[in-house]
Length: 191
Image 1 (tube, helix red, strand yellow):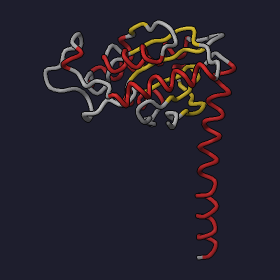
Image 2 (cartoon, rainbow, N blue to C red):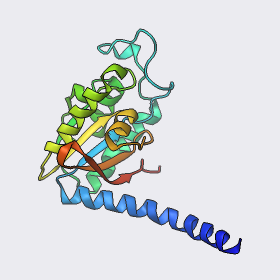
Image 3 (cartoon, helix red, strand yellow):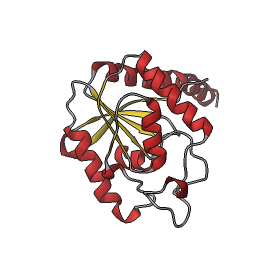
Protein backbone atom coordinates (compact mmCIF):
# COMPACT_ATOMS: atom_id res chain seq x y z
CA UNK A 1 0.00 0.00 0.00
CA UNK A 2 2.82 2.38 0.88
CA UNK A 3 4.48 1.69 -2.50
CA UNK A 4 1.27 2.58 -4.32
CA UNK A 5 0.95 5.80 -2.34
CA UNK A 6 4.57 6.75 -3.09
CA UNK A 7 4.09 5.93 -6.77
CA UNK A 8 1.00 8.16 -6.89
CA UNK A 9 2.81 11.04 -5.20
CA UNK A 10 5.77 10.73 -7.59
CA UNK A 11 3.41 10.65 -10.58
CA UNK A 12 1.52 13.72 -9.39
CA UNK A 13 4.75 15.59 -8.71
CA UNK A 14 5.94 14.84 -12.23
CA UNK A 15 2.80 16.16 -13.90
CA UNK A 16 3.52 19.92 -13.73
CA UNK A 17 7.00 19.32 -15.09
CA UNK A 18 5.60 17.32 -17.97
CA UNK A 19 3.28 20.22 -18.75
CA UNK A 20 6.17 22.68 -18.68
CA UNK A 21 8.30 20.39 -20.85
CA UNK A 22 5.41 20.22 -23.32
CA UNK A 23 5.31 24.01 -23.50
CA UNK A 24 9.09 24.31 -23.74
CA UNK A 25 9.15 21.81 -26.62
CA UNK A 26 6.44 23.79 -28.42
CA UNK A 27 8.34 27.08 -28.12
CA UNK A 28 11.59 25.39 -29.22
CA UNK A 29 9.89 23.96 -32.31
CA UNK A 30 8.38 27.32 -33.28
CA UNK A 31 11.74 29.07 -32.86
CA UNK A 32 13.32 26.44 -35.09
CA UNK A 33 10.67 26.96 -37.78
CA UNK A 34 9.00 24.57 -40.18
CA UNK A 35 6.20 23.60 -37.78
CA UNK A 36 2.45 24.12 -37.71
CA UNK A 37 0.69 25.88 -34.83
CA UNK A 38 -2.92 24.72 -34.56
CA UNK A 39 -4.75 27.30 -32.49
CA UNK A 40 -8.28 26.99 -31.18
CA UNK A 41 -10.17 30.26 -31.48
CA UNK A 42 -10.30 32.24 -28.26
CA UNK A 43 -13.27 32.45 -25.86
CA UNK A 44 -16.62 32.32 -27.65
CA UNK A 45 -19.36 31.54 -25.13
CA UNK A 46 -22.53 29.70 -25.95
CA UNK A 47 -21.70 26.02 -26.02
CA UNK A 48 -20.69 23.93 -29.01
CA UNK A 49 -21.44 24.67 -32.65
CA UNK A 50 -23.67 27.57 -33.61
CA UNK A 51 -27.27 28.68 -33.05
CA UNK A 52 -29.90 27.06 -35.28
CA UNK A 53 -30.22 28.82 -38.61
CA UNK A 54 -26.76 30.43 -38.47
CA UNK A 55 -25.28 31.68 -41.73
CA UNK A 56 -21.60 31.40 -42.45
CA UNK A 57 -21.60 34.77 -44.24
CA UNK A 58 -23.39 36.56 -41.37
CA UNK A 59 -21.40 36.88 -38.15
CA UNK A 60 -24.45 38.16 -36.28
CA UNK A 61 -25.99 34.66 -36.57
CA UNK A 62 -22.93 32.80 -35.19
CA UNK A 63 -21.28 32.22 -31.82
CA UNK A 64 -18.74 35.02 -31.59
CA UNK A 65 -15.82 36.07 -29.42
CA UNK A 66 -16.50 37.60 -26.04
CA UNK A 67 -14.59 40.62 -24.76
CA UNK A 68 -12.40 38.09 -22.92
CA UNK A 69 -11.82 36.22 -26.19
CA UNK A 70 -10.76 39.41 -27.96
CA UNK A 71 -8.35 40.26 -25.11
CA UNK A 72 -6.95 36.70 -25.20
CA UNK A 73 -6.31 36.93 -28.94
CA UNK A 74 -4.42 40.21 -28.53
CA UNK A 75 -2.37 38.77 -25.63
CA UNK A 76 -1.49 35.63 -27.58
CA UNK A 77 -0.40 37.70 -30.58
CA UNK A 78 1.73 39.92 -28.35
CA UNK A 79 3.37 36.86 -26.76
CA UNK A 80 4.15 35.32 -30.16
CA UNK A 81 5.67 38.62 -31.30
CA UNK A 82 7.70 38.94 -28.09
CA UNK A 83 9.03 35.41 -28.65
CA UNK A 84 9.90 36.44 -32.25
CA UNK A 85 7.96 33.57 -33.78
CA UNK A 86 7.69 33.92 -37.55
CA UNK A 87 4.71 32.68 -39.53
CA UNK A 88 5.03 32.35 -43.29
CA UNK A 89 1.29 31.88 -43.64
CA UNK A 90 -1.82 32.18 -41.49
CA UNK A 91 -4.89 30.12 -42.35
CA UNK A 92 -8.27 30.28 -40.67
CA UNK A 93 -11.59 28.52 -40.59
CA UNK A 94 -14.28 30.57 -42.33
CA UNK A 95 -16.24 30.89 -39.03
CA UNK A 96 -16.24 34.47 -37.69
CA UNK A 97 -14.83 33.54 -34.25
CA UNK A 98 -11.76 32.11 -36.03
CA UNK A 99 -11.29 34.94 -38.52
CA UNK A 100 -11.64 37.50 -35.73
CA UNK A 101 -9.12 35.63 -33.57
CA UNK A 102 -6.67 35.57 -36.49
CA UNK A 103 -7.17 39.29 -37.15
CA UNK A 104 -6.73 40.27 -33.49
CA UNK A 105 -3.48 38.28 -33.20
CA UNK A 106 -2.08 41.00 -35.49
CA UNK A 107 0.56 38.69 -36.95
CA UNK A 108 -0.22 39.30 -40.62
CA UNK A 109 -3.01 38.67 -43.10
CA UNK A 110 -4.98 35.46 -42.73
CA UNK A 111 -6.42 33.45 -45.57
CA UNK A 112 -9.67 31.53 -45.15
CA UNK A 113 -9.10 27.80 -45.64
CA UNK A 114 -12.40 25.89 -45.85
CA UNK A 115 -10.68 22.59 -44.97
CA UNK A 116 -10.38 23.94 -41.41
CA UNK A 117 -14.15 24.63 -41.22
CA UNK A 118 -16.06 23.53 -38.13
CA UNK A 119 -16.30 19.70 -38.09
CA UNK A 120 -19.02 19.83 -35.41
CA UNK A 121 -21.35 21.66 -37.76
CA UNK A 122 -20.05 19.91 -40.89
CA UNK A 123 -20.11 16.46 -39.26
CA UNK A 124 -21.00 14.79 -42.57
CA UNK A 125 -17.64 16.08 -43.93
CA UNK A 126 -15.37 15.25 -40.98
CA UNK A 127 -13.22 12.75 -42.86
CA UNK A 128 -12.72 14.95 -45.94
CA UNK A 129 -11.97 18.06 -43.86
CA UNK A 130 -9.54 16.16 -41.64
CA UNK A 131 -7.75 14.63 -44.64
CA UNK A 132 -7.53 18.09 -46.21
CA UNK A 133 -6.11 19.55 -42.99
CA UNK A 134 -3.55 16.76 -42.72
CA UNK A 135 -2.52 17.37 -46.33
CA UNK A 136 -1.93 21.06 -45.58
CA UNK A 137 0.08 20.20 -42.45
CA UNK A 138 2.06 17.49 -44.23
CA UNK A 139 3.03 19.80 -47.08
CA UNK A 140 4.29 22.62 -44.84
CA UNK A 141 8.07 22.87 -45.03
CA UNK A 142 8.90 26.31 -43.73
CA UNK A 143 11.49 27.74 -43.11
CA UNK A 144 8.96 29.68 -41.06
CA UNK A 145 5.88 28.27 -39.34
CA UNK A 146 2.27 27.94 -40.40
CA UNK A 147 -0.48 29.18 -38.07
CA UNK A 148 -3.95 27.66 -38.39
CA UNK A 149 -6.81 29.18 -36.38
CA UNK A 150 -9.61 26.63 -36.19
CA UNK A 151 -11.94 24.81 -33.80
CA UNK A 152 -11.20 22.47 -30.90
CA UNK A 153 -12.97 19.54 -32.56
CA UNK A 154 -10.86 20.02 -35.70
CA UNK A 155 -7.65 19.94 -33.69
CA UNK A 156 -8.94 16.88 -31.87
CA UNK A 157 -9.57 15.12 -35.19
CA UNK A 158 -6.17 16.15 -36.58
CA UNK A 159 -4.15 15.14 -33.53
CA UNK A 160 -6.00 11.96 -32.75
CA UNK A 161 -7.72 12.92 -29.56
CA UNK A 162 -6.59 16.13 -27.83
CA UNK A 163 -9.25 18.87 -27.62
CA UNK A 164 -7.49 22.11 -26.62
CA UNK A 165 -8.87 24.90 -24.46
CA UNK A 166 -10.02 28.11 -26.12
CA UNK A 167 -6.93 30.01 -27.32
CA UNK A 168 -4.55 27.10 -26.71
CA UNK A 169 -1.96 26.31 -29.38
CA UNK A 170 -0.97 22.76 -30.27
CA UNK A 171 2.33 22.68 -32.18
CA UNK A 172 2.59 19.81 -34.64
CA UNK A 173 4.80 18.45 -37.39
CA UNK A 174 3.49 16.67 -40.45
CA UNK A 175 4.58 13.15 -41.17
CA UNK A 176 4.43 10.70 -44.01
CA UNK A 177 1.06 9.26 -44.90
CA UNK A 178 -0.79 12.32 -43.59
CA UNK A 179 0.14 11.66 -39.98
CA UNK A 180 0.30 14.60 -37.59
CA UNK A 181 2.78 14.41 -34.72
CA UNK A 182 2.18 16.61 -31.69
CA UNK A 183 5.31 18.44 -30.51
CA UNK A 184 3.91 20.41 -27.57
CA UNK A 185 1.22 22.78 -26.35
CA UNK A 186 1.17 26.47 -25.46
CA UNK A 187 -1.55 27.59 -23.05
CA UNK A 188 -3.26 30.97 -23.18
CA UNK A 189 -1.04 33.57 -21.44
CA UNK A 190 -2.17 34.37 -17.90
CA UNK A 191 -3.12 38.00 -17.38
